[in-house]
Image (cartoon, rainbow, N blue to C red; front, side, top):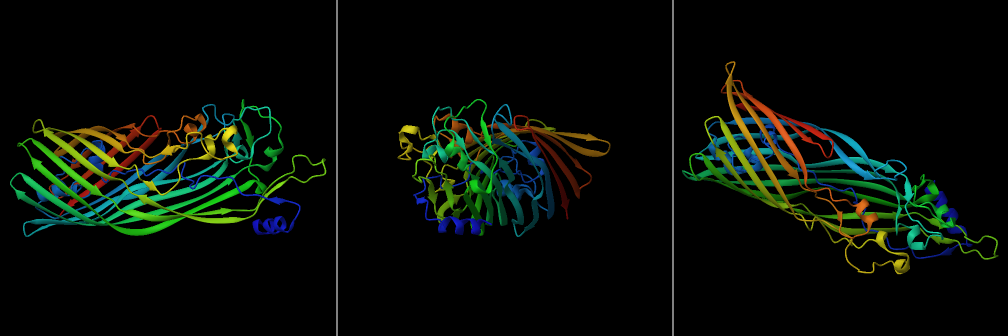
Length: 469
């Protein structure tokens, strides 16, 4: 169908061919890397585990903690959750101008095997560290309020013309690792995880701009004007696909300051991947605005393809954690994580046409010429506590905590309200966690956690089984 339309357009000599206006080099308005807690125990304590790290879970958080283990262990963890995504839509569709979508997730988070030998502790593990998946459709809508026709820049997204979109996105980061840990001195422990890190990335998006809007003589932004997508409105197709392994590592230290107070330090190094955005522009026509003047001033854009390379730099981080055993029953922990995520998407032009004013629209350039969106470095806070209770012949471990979620995605730095709506700041959401563990005997332990984010309407569960051999 598309090929037939393109051939028809190409054979019609009545159209004047024009150069397409500039458009964003990416379709990552909703792109996010969402960290996943590896197991039930740390997840129930808000992820605050760098300074504790005294069980098999330490392999994925602070490998130095494995040096505490004196017997082989196997652990398996799974998560079940509902991730939420807020997409900007017309206020005619939703009064707040956004629509929330829920994506169910059921996935393995961590499998590891621990084996102490020769004064060292060795481990191998597989961990799903980041995961994000969504599909999203919206109709084109216009918020422009002007008693005049659209300029060529406004026809393709400037000044409040929001493209219709059909997007599918999937990203996952998986670590496959070998770990070695050792007690260097009675109170000093060190560990190193050597990993092959797999990136799975897929993005397919179609953008629609309705040609009939070109003929409209005036616009009224209240309520937003909605335009359902048609074949003739298909303007752009983005396709990104990457499945690659790269080397990475994690280095950890654990210092026992006193018998009840410990300090953990972790550096987590993640790789960079060369990715390519394959852009396809089908043939596209804007109709003649003055059909009765004897002149055909319709605009025709011929089919085009572009390949735009960029680099995806997964966010490294430094982590610092304190744990304090206030009594034989109560353990408290707090972590601070410093993420280096500013260059997450490198090599793309972040100066977007969406905030070009009608005066500068013909030049397709902002008045300030600065980037309109950016990705920030992030600081994440985590804290939790664990209470040990002996009842019914079993040891019960009750836990609670909280953490702040970093936003590894684009957000607007432009003051333009349209860009702020399209690229909102999604960082700093607070998650509240709780959970419990039960030690059945000296061989078997079960852990479970609940993770709730009220602001996002999001809930998740992680369950873990630990077997001591």
